[in-house]
Amino acid sequence: MGGRVARVARATPVVMGAALGVSLLLPAVPAAAHNSLTGSSPADGARVAAAPTQVELRFLSKLDPATTTVTVVGPGRVPAAGGEPRFAGNRVRVPFAPGPAGEYTVGYQVASGDGHPVKGQVTFTLTTGAPAPAPSPTPSPTGPVAQSATPGGGTPAGDAPTSAEPASAAADDRTAPIWPWLLGAGLAVALGGALLLLLRRRRS
Image (cartoon, rainbow, N blue to C red; front, side):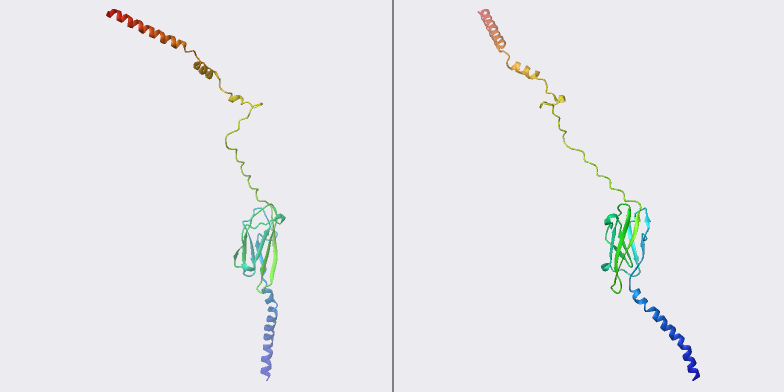
């Protein structure tokens, strides 16, 4: 009898310790079902001079792309996400499109294992803004250059009309008298007749 009591007495602390351990673990089961943020890049509150190519969020549990939402906005609530989120286990990465210097906010919403949504945000400050795009060159005008007219509707000084002297000379040639030609023809006929008359006299 005394041996049984002693064995029960020795087993009681073990049983009570196991029960206490189970009671301590029970409250942690619901807490573990809630997903939570474990880190980010850039870190929350960081100040960065060189803009990152992407923003990364790391969580306690694996993410479901269908129930995960990530937004990135810059100064003036201007969107700064350069593309769709990319998921890898418990991490999500979003391409970053930097704008002016200032504070950027990365907001997220994920679903936990028990279906409870978890929301939060991470902020970081970009101390050096993205350079402004270079202005596009202005195209040069094409086509012939318009000639400037002189006052009164005249032609420019450099484009003065050619002299009218050749035209006048041609007009004089067309209107010259034809009597010198007639006189020459008459002299030729007279000379030919004289020669014929002289030949006939010699034959006779």
